[in-house]
Image 1 (cartoon, rainbow, N blue to C red):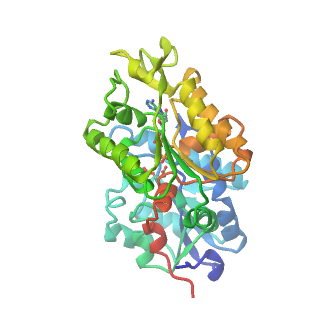
Image 2: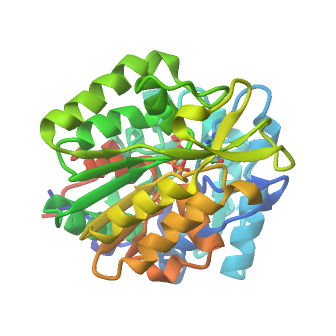
Image 3: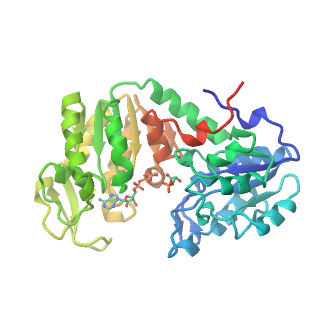
Length: 395
Ligand SMILES: Nc1ncnc2c1ncn2[C@@H]1O[C@H](COP(=O)(O)OP(=O)(O)OP(=O)(O)O)[C@@H](O)[C@H]1O
Ligand SMILES: O=C(O)[C@H](O)COP(=O)(O)O
């Protein structure tokens, strides 16, 4: 069902609560990749130009009591202000009197950024009281946070029950492009799943087995599949609870005729650090005490060959610890293979994969770089995204 967008409503003089996904990587107080902030600019600028009072809200990371202070939105407000070329007010609270006072001060065209919405316990629980408190700040709700659309939280879904609720330009664009590629996928269809979040991505892998011709796993999560095949993995990342499931998926892939590719060799390190001792071994030769940190050259060749034969490639999650120079080769080689697959539609999803493609200067060689990691995967699985479902239907 098509959803109303920002174009369908009048925003002049209105207080507009915009959920954005400013969950960006930080190094101390510096935003190291501002892609997600830049991606929201068309919506923010449109609202400014059309005389709205813009209230922006986002989560940043996964706050705990220990890391909370490092996850305040101040660096994001500073970067946004630079990009907009105008001041961005920022509150230190998510809701409450300080926020209400800051909203009351807004003139048409002003921009306010709230504190990290996950500082409120009710956010992830989709607490109706928090959703109502958000709604009470504004006249209209715009969801432009495609990257968080798979989360049914107070600021991504709950709030939509209490205000007119429409999609922003980024949300609209992502749904259009990804929808067009994934609803009737071209074949051969290859999905590449990497990164570290085994638990988050294992369900995705199961659902993808019904859709893809080739499924490639790499990065930290692949070692659970390596172990599931009976090999030792030393100190590599392992999700022991998911081992039986991993075994089952390998079987299911065989039954369904899906080409399920796992690493055949790996770069190993004797500690999780850039200055570790490093070696490259076949996958059945990982010594005790060493950990897999990247795919090896034989795996690169195997994966590149599969990518070359594909008409649609979707990639989520790096092939190794690419942030550390000695372990970046596998991710770079896979990025290059996608760049070389000029006959294929190539879609990158996930903050780290997008950052990797940028780092290797291959971004302009991809068909689409999505701002959503989990969200693009869930869309690919055919799931309805709660942040989209909550929006008003177009007439
Ligand atoms: N072999 C490995 N061992 C440990 N960590 C790894 C390994 N390979 C990759 N990683 C880490 O995985 C992290 C990225 O994983 P993640 O699952 O968050 O991917 P992503 O592309 O950001 O996707 P999403 O946006 O869906 O979270 C990187 O920080 C990378 O260093
Ligand atoms: O980076 C993402 O995928 C989104 O911002 C959602 O973050 P989350 O996985 O912490 O909900």
